Image (cartoon, rainbow, N blue to C red; front, side):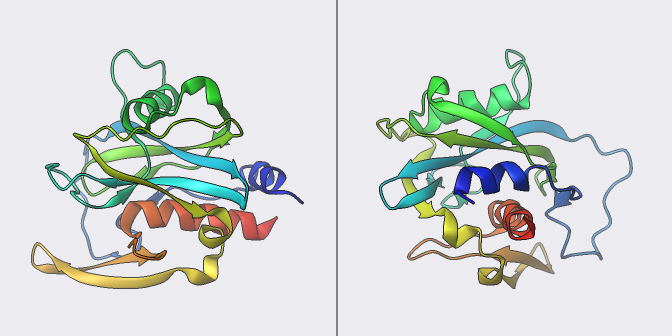
Length: 198
């Protein structure tokens, strides 16, 4: 089965929503909290060496999550038809990926972040080349990771650090010099589990 077929089959699998709190069951979430809808694009690019996932390293100047590894994406604005439109718009703004180059294969279950977003991961298939243009105010670097690496659930580990006085646990899936962790790793792990089930 080729990568595209595996992704399409993976998107048909059932799985539950995830959150930054999955590994931290002692966290008490406020009742009636309002989560802001957001969309991130998981861009799977057909490359000469096989399928690759495009990721960004956030600018160190950003207020939220500076220097972290992330998918292109962001909150849904009033002008966005839905979270898929938000993910595609943000990907074009952040890394120069034209919407017309992305074939949306589907979405994964939502992921709740510690920062109050309800994120919908959008799986995009990209066969056409494009010039990667990082938006300097938001993106320090654009890079690619082999799909085979992030689709291997055995490569994920759980690590922890102290945050606001408590120990928080999170998933990681490092690749070379890139420390992929937190929500990005959790979303990718969910995709890996689905792909291994097909």
